[in-house]
Amino acid sequence: MYAAKSQICGPYDEAPYGGDFYVYYSVDEKGEYKIPRIAIRMSVSDKIGEIRGVATGQNLEEGLEDILQTKLKEM
Image (tube, rainbow, N blue to C red; front, side, top):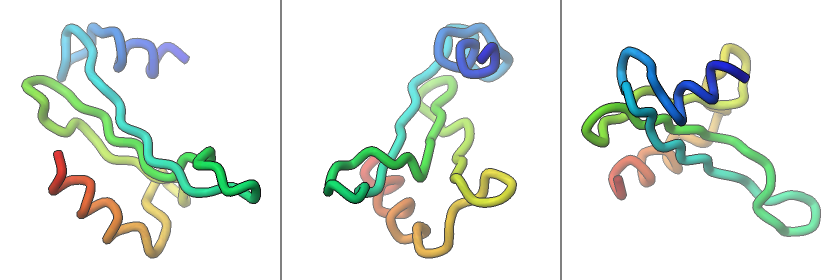
């Protein structure tokens, strides 16, 4: 909990005032976007601090690379 709080609210090395998180979800069995799949943490000057997925080692699941690339181009 401390790590998430410090990354959002600060301070930590890459962003003394915290930073934004973007979380991308997939559709659940009810057709609602509620299953988190990709998290993008922003750091100083709107730069990407890290990208994490839900596969082993917090990697992206296979097949999500194109979705991530599209989102990164939008940012």
